[in-house]
Length: 198
Image (cartoon, rainbow, N blue to C red; front, side):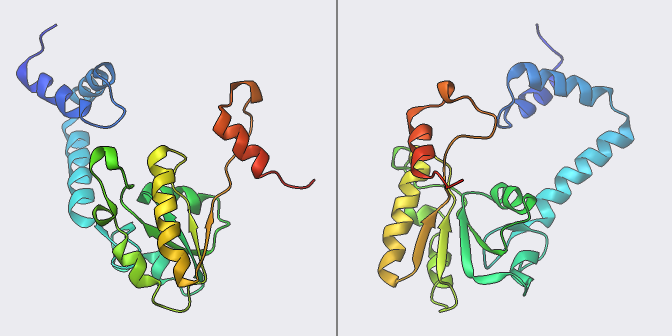
């Protein structure tokens, strides 16, 4: 079905968001059209504010509205630990569990030879600069368990080990509530390797 041009453009804009297919984009577009002018203005204002007011922390690379970010400013955090993640949303996920008390480093992507993304294309140089400080004793790599995540993990590990810094990786295994029969081989292998004593 053909929609009026403004609706078609709105659908096209929503469909460019990750994980949004054409049906969801259409639903979002029609929902937006049904909103009041005040609600649409507030929505647009929030979009613009997020785009204009946010920046990346000059120390860790996390998304922030102040530089350095609140985590880097927090003197109670353990400066001897740095958890390396792919994106700012991973920092938020780790902070929700309220157990990790070290610092972070956000790579803003992963090494991906298939996509032409090399070590110079992600936020690695600033990590190396941070490690010049003798305070850092361990770097925990927390990239996703994908081919690119594993490649990035191995690269960072090989880069840092000669400096005498301990490099560890988050444990991997079966998710809580998952069935063994549906788990893939890599997940099962990680679950066996990372087993703990009861």
